[in-house]
Image (cartoon, rainbow, N blue to C red):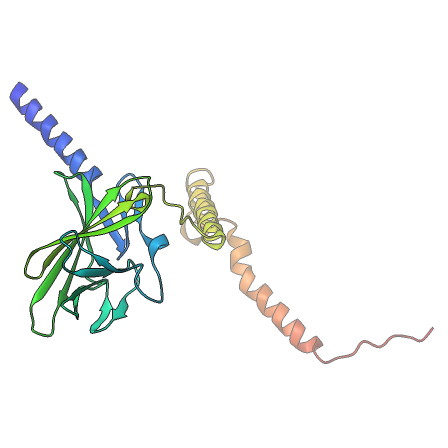
Length: 238
């Protein structure tokens, strides 16, 4: 019995840790954690090219360009999230649509994985490690671990989980309030009619007589406006 409780506790702890480290994709540059915080790279994105252009890898061999959120084109790279320049030739190393978020427990970093099919039908895969740091933003291509597989690192504050400041618009909030008030009115009114007034049938609708008469009132108002339209009111001259 005691061992079963221990196993259950360990399972619960594992589940909580796993859930905490899960970051559900919102779009190609944003994911949301279970605690409501987000990782959002949108402030880095550019709409007219890569945020980081032709950065030399740590081995001093190839150049890499990267842009979160928005696809870019560079040479023979089109609609890319990541582009490699090797021996003067560009290769698409991943598209925005392919972005997948994950968590690496060994490095304790979140990762975005991009993929792209080349014109030779070879699959290229790029792992972008997000290194949470409050210092200056740094983009550092590391190495091509094997043909078609790349590792890049982005270090900066936007790699850190933070509160989601996207919020709700004023219109959305008003709609939510309106729906809540209507729901309370209907549910509360129906319960009052049933249990307090002992009503049944259509009479359980709150203010039944008003709502059943409302269509006729609207109709009368429309016809009154139509009949009065175009008529001029005569006034006696003083």
